[in-house]
Length: 79
Image (cartoon, rainbow, N blue to C red; front, top):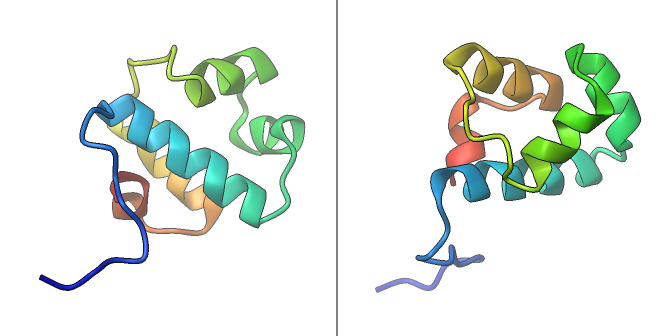
């Protein structure tokens, strides 16, 4: 079995995984929470809820919009 560059915690929920990836990708792109929320048309409170995994009701459109705002394919939010 080949080693990977990262490991996913098996106890992470789908919401936690998406939140972790959004935070990581947002920081790589040097986007503040405020700028990123504005880019999405969300409030800062909504972004905080997503990034702390408090927002579990993401629609497919939300995932597409997050991915587009981060410049990645939606699948990148699930790995």
